[in-house]
Image (tube, rainbow, N blue to C red):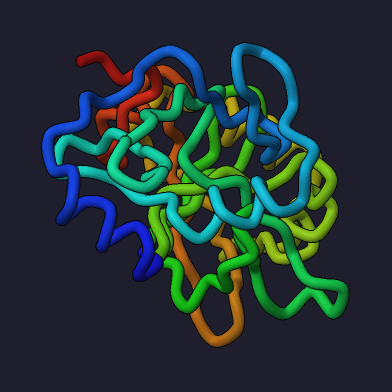
Length: 189
């Protein structure tokens, strides 16, 4: 969090939190009252002051006021860099490590990262497919379809290769992701 935010919090500690105004969409765009925020200065400020509370509610700390984010899918939207070697969150923070990988019923890839839970941007699914492995041969369409058909909570026969790490790919329904990964999609007061 930036110093000006910390100073504001010390000066005005009891400003009520804001709910229902801010949202993060599936593409990693910030919205206010349903409209995309387009000013780069505002986006940069939100990116630098975005965090989660102890209940898993993600928010933007705007000076002394905390604005809780409704999440269309996950707290972070992750993108592969041009070289395909690292992941970056929609906030422009670089992912240092990934501890778990999940596949939802629609084929979205969720990752538990050192920054928090994130969903891979749909534009990078080809990147993810190149990193899927199986013990018994190639990952063909049939094998992926079998993994998608497994019940939520199952260990698939697939792995996600990220650098030297080879993470088991677990099936997780999108509706169960908040509970499993510890975040709240629609924060309430």
